[in-house]
Image 1 (tube, rainbow, N blue to C red):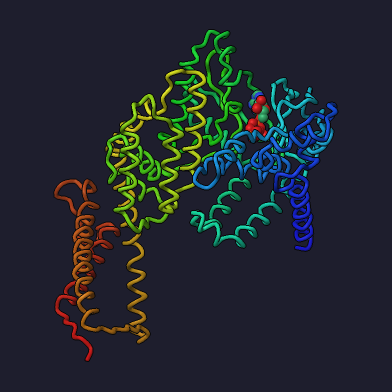
Image 2: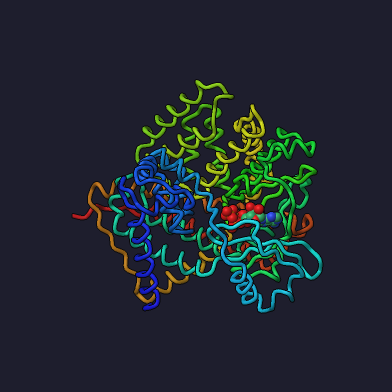
Amino acid sequence: MFKNTISNLTRIRQVSEVLIRYGFEDAVTTTALRRLVPRSRRISWQEGEQAVFETTRWQRIRMIIEELGPTFIKLAQAMSNRADLLPQPLIDEFEKLQSNVPPFDVQVAKGLIEQELGRPINEVFSEFDDVPLGSASIGQVHRARLLSGEEVVVKVQRPGVQEKVRSDLALLHELVRLTAGFLRKQGLANPQDVVDAFERSMTKELDYTSEARSMEQFRKLYESYETFYIPKPYREMSTAKVLVIEFVSGCKITDKPQLLAWGLSPEQVAETGMDIYLTQIFEFGIFHADPHPGNVLVRPDGTLVLIDFGMVGKLTKQQKYAFAGVFIGMARQDPRSMALSFRRLALTSDIPDMRAFETSLSELIEDFATLDVKDMSMSDLADALQGVIYTYKLQVPGAVFLILRALVILEGIGKVLHPRFNTFEFVRPYGARIIAEQYSADNILSEAQYTGTQLLALIQTLPADIRQIMRKISRGDLRVRVELSGYQLLMRKADQLVSRGILAAISVALILFAGLSLLGRYPAGQMPYYRGLPVVTWYSLGVAAFLLLILFILGTKRERPRE
Ligand SMILES: Nc1ncnc2c1ncn2[C@@H]1O[C@H](COP(=O)(O)OP(=O)(O)OP(=O)(O)O)[C@@H](O)[C@H]1O
């Protein structure tokens, strides 16, 4: 506790120092100057002043964030699609945050690996490259070779990054608590939830075992795909802070000259990439959430390789259908179905003014309907959809924002490779496939099975509940409070009609279920004597009889208003 307070105070001091060093306003600060002009170049005071004046406030905010480290970098990256909250120049700066930070000392990295694996480096690797392949805010990656000869990469976490992120998150929670009112006025309906979701995603990114698990999950899902490959993680040599992965060679997906040199068609590569991504979203409901070009490699044979599974998004089946429904409603120019899909997608189905919501959606549809498909851009659509989500304060799963962001990044990649690349043309067939899947016999059967299981659970628990109620009645413990005025009585009557309808429907369903439970069990004419019937049949008939008795009692009772 005391240790935490001290580390939080230390972090507050560090954050304040960075802010002061860069200055909030357009004043000349030495730190900003040092980053703008190389040390080797001698410049006059006027030149320096000019350079800083030319650096906008937004550039300096980006520099501050780079210096503050992983939590702030990831937060800014996550905010970089909030065009409704942040000015465009700041968004442009946030997009530059590539988290390409200077590497840390290789000896420190080796020390950490030995400590984590509990063995000297040379007992695990026969070769270890001291120059990292890449270094980011959370960790850095070294190339190495296992004693067995396999080529691997070793991802090592920066020392102290966990503690730093933990105190940053504590600060962030405190900051959001203090400014919650202001943030709500700015359109952020539930700021604490946003920080909670961010904390969950950061915690996962800091645990490399979670990344290894995601890689294994993807490898299994895509094992039959010939055009897509996910490198193998070595779980037995990995911990929360060290991750050993199979090395894959390839070029960045946007390296068009290299693709051409290998005789590959960049257009084909773009199409494969989009196809693989849409399969993740619309078929498996689990997707790699950070498809920046450095994380998508292409092998000389055209196979696509995804690396860096630190951020993975998931949609449940229902969320997947609802999300696809938004796109399908848009393509069919049907604001009502779009609104209903949004409602299914929202975590709370509370949209106070559904009519205004539909009007906004129909305006959005009209804006896009006037465009030619070739002029439609995913980033415009993502902005428009996010605008609607924020205006109506819809609480949609975080995965939805990740998908929109991923689709925008992919569109950018597609445009580099394919001059006529259009995301919507790729999405369209998936819409049709999703509709077919949603209404497939298998799906309807599994929904029915789910409902059946629920009913069975009800049948199993109901007798116990009824026994409990009966026990209370016999002990004289059951108290029922009835206070009815004329108006309440009217409402109660309406409620009763509905409840009786439901009771009657459940009774009929239970009797049918009892009949179905016998189907196919016995050869014709050999139905056993009632003692030999299955327990589930007895339960169903018993509960149906009890419900019918209640219905009968309700039917004979009359309520009188209290005097
Ligand atoms: N399996 C691999 N085979 C070959 N190179 C790899 C592999 N994994 C990572 N690299 C190289 O290391 C770099 C950093 O890896 P990775 O993206 O996983 O790290 P990171 O710390 O999560 O970085 P960032 O968050 O910036 O993407 C990659 O850009 C790539 O060049």
